[in-house]
Structures are given as C-alpha cells and as structure tokens.
Length: 431
Image: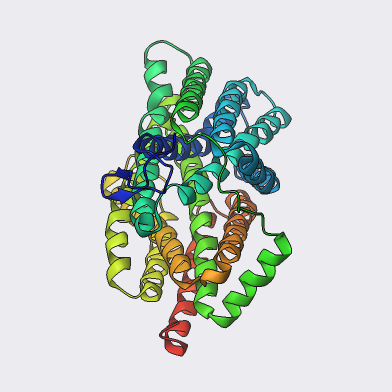
C-alpha cells in the first residue's frame, strides 16, 4: 500500500508513496554507506604494513593504483546499476550492494600479495558502485520537491556522522583488540569481520525498510553523448556552471587526499616513532576523525551561509579556505603534536566540506530545469576525474617528491579555481 502523499519526516515532506520508515531507513543507509567507504580508505595502510609488509617508499603509488582501479570499475558499473534499479527497484540493488561489500570485507584481510590485494579491491568496487549509485538515486527519489534542500542537508549530516563514527570506532578497533592479546594481523582480520557483519546487517535493514517496487513508469535513461552535449552547452551559456564543475572536481579530490594520503602519512609517521601498527592506526584515526568531525560541524555553518550569501562568492571563499587548509596539511607529520595538528584538522575539515556543499548548491541553483540531468551527469564525470587525477598524480608525488605532495597539489588546484571564480565574479556578477 502506498504511503499518503502528506507523509513527513520531521520538517521534511516525502514524495508520494514514501513512508516515514522509508525515509529513516534511507538516512541509516546514508550513514552506514559513507562510514564504511571512509573506513576502507583509512584502513588500507594497515593492510600494506601488516599483511603485505610493503616498503614505505612503495605505499603511495600502491594506494593510488588501488584508488584508480576502484574508480574505473565504479565508472563502468554506475550506468548498469542505475538501469537495473529502474527495472527491479532501488531496494534490491542496495541490498545486493551491501551483501557484496560484506563478502569483500571478508576477503580483504586474506590478501598477502599486491595482486591479491588488487583483486580484492576490484571485487569490492562492484559493491561500492552499487551502494554509491543507489545512495544518489534514492536521495533524489525520496523527498518532495519543496523539501529537497532540507533532505539533502539532513542526508549530508548523517553521511558526515557515519564517517566520524567509522573512523573513531572501527579505526581504533585494531588497537583495542591488540591490547586484549591479539597480534596485529588477527586484530585487523577481526576488525574486517565486524565491518562485514555491519554490511550484512545493513543489507537486511534496507531490504526491509526501503520502498518496494520500481520508480515512475516515465523514467528513462539519457544517452551519454546527450548528457555530454547538453551539459557542456549549459556551461557555455552560463559560466557559473563551469565553476560548479570545477568545485565538484576538487571536492572529490579532497576526499582522496584526506581519506587515503593523510591517513597513510600519519600511520607511517607513527610507525617511525616505534608504535605498533594497531597503535599507529588508532593514533591516525583520532586525527582523521577530527577532520571528519570538523566537516560535520562545518556542513551546518556553510549550509546557512549558502542560503544567505551569493553562491559564487561562497564558492570562492571555499577555494580560498581549501588552499590554506591543504597547504597547512602538507606539514602534518607527527600525529602526537596535537597543538599543531588540531587547528590544521579544523581547517582541512572546513575546506573539504565547503567545497562539497558549494558545488552541490551551485549546481542546483544554476542548472537549467530543461537539462538538469545532463548538468549533474557532467558533474559526476568531473567528480570521477578529480578522483583519478588526485590518485594518479598524488600517489606519484607522495613516493617520488614529498609526502606533502598531494596536499600541495590540492592547495594549488584550489587556488587556481579560486582565481577563476574571482575573474568570473568580476566578469559576470550574476548568472
């Protein structure tokens, strides 16, 4: 039976046919999806050091290779999973994604060589593509149009909360287990098993709680070349859309620098100080978790700013903040020096979330109704390009030039985008 059109989740009106249970289930799914994806980025250094015993000078390019492989698989599978969800429903695809991730978490700690680890990463990417595609799709389906902004904001809050919980919780679990008598390898394996259990539980929750059935009968898939043509035409007619695409590019690159290279650098620094791997992971989790907590708080602040100020000016401010934050982040190497680390983490979290929120709000404001799907499609391509660019270039810089290289890279990119925004503000103050 369909829910009444007036179903609400607090102040948020849900789309016809969606119940309060559907809405709450989706917020849980957003919480656990982002939390688990943040955890797998963070814990890779643990596998490289404990399971593979990989030399430190090879770890940067290795995590970069894993990230590039993951993104390529995800890009190839986004469209098929979207089409499958239109045929059999979002609930079944989301359930499949969590079940696949559960198997992936069981396989990861069994890897002992680089080819085995790469195979696990490629396998895991199938589940990432499924849950990532459904996260965006169900987010678009669930709210009534008049409540869309508030629902997106609430979802962003739960996603940030998921990242904080995973880093502070699962990220510190290896040390807790090691202190209880396990060796590092067994502690890591048990942590991955617990993550697999959370995935299995989440598969059951979304199967029970998400809306059954398929979407509207009039839904259709836009060909890729149409998306490309219309999305680029919209940007040519409104340069602010170019700026939004660039914000999307850098905001996803930011995630790689913090989730992968910052955590790798902190764990390596802790090992150099003589810590065990489990203690190093716990130490790094406090710092990466502090960045996520700062982003969680910043999401509320920047959400208010974007409703009160010009979105272009706010995007310029976000890029200025990001340049300073990532330049400062290049100097973090001692996870125990909290007097220096804490303010830099605050800047990094604010810089990351401001870029994400600014890109999303500018896209929503500037995209023409007639080709909004195409504009968001190009934005997705920009996001993937940001991930591939940051993984590839950042991994090479990390190993060959400096461990602060990925941070200098994103500081420079953010500064260049800021300059473009300033030029755009002077040339076209209003869209």
